[in-house]
Length: 255
Image 1 (cartoon, rainbow, N blue to C red):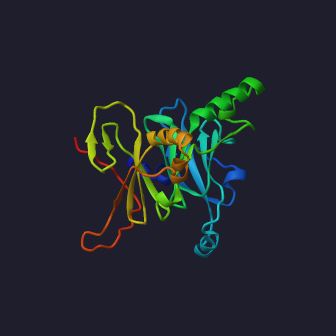
Image 2 (cartoon, rainbow, N blue to C red; image 1 turned 90 degrees about the vertical axis):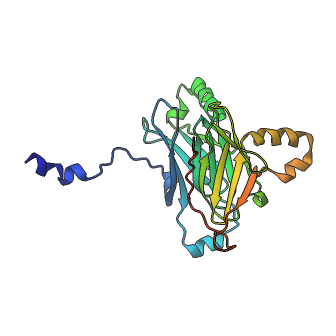
Image 3 (cartoon, one colour; image 1 turned 30 degrees about the vertical axis):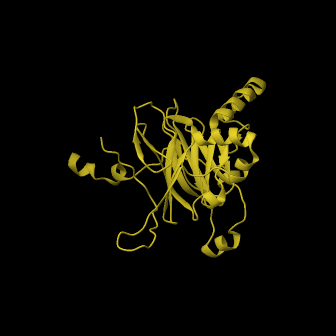
């Protein structure tokens, strides 16, 4: 009898333990990606939502700017998102930095890369708490909306929708010439790579953002150039010169 009970439907079916929904940000949208926030005392999951459009509808709105969202949900509050991250387009994929939970990078439908830093949002939440007595980052009506700290230049980004993002490990970096550089484990991660159906593998460095801001303050030329990848690799089919269309990346680094 015990053996027969092991295969019972009640044991083999998945059960819903928690659900999250927000009428303003989720209604009429589909989930495009999710990722767990690292190094938090509570369970926090990030979810990006995109417009539900047919191929014909996407062609009609191509090139138009609209707002996309990533919602950060704390399992202690299924009603109010902890933070809302805004982007100038549907966020197709995103990743938290494994070594710094405040840094989030996302790829949007235009092929651009968007970077958020939650440090300012957390400070804003603490300020609201000191005034209202309600911790905004853990729910309530004072949900914090975080704006991007940097958006890559269109002409330096992917030509198609970004399909995946992966952070480089703490012991590896890519030089501006595309050379793999081994380094001592500092516990910090600054570089990540992105792929899209345009056949490009792009490497990015978030440290370049602060460098660009400093250079922009001194020289208007850098402001016009914008933020772009550290290195660009074109992926072609091994049996021809045709571009490949990667949709996912798994990074495995040998010891």
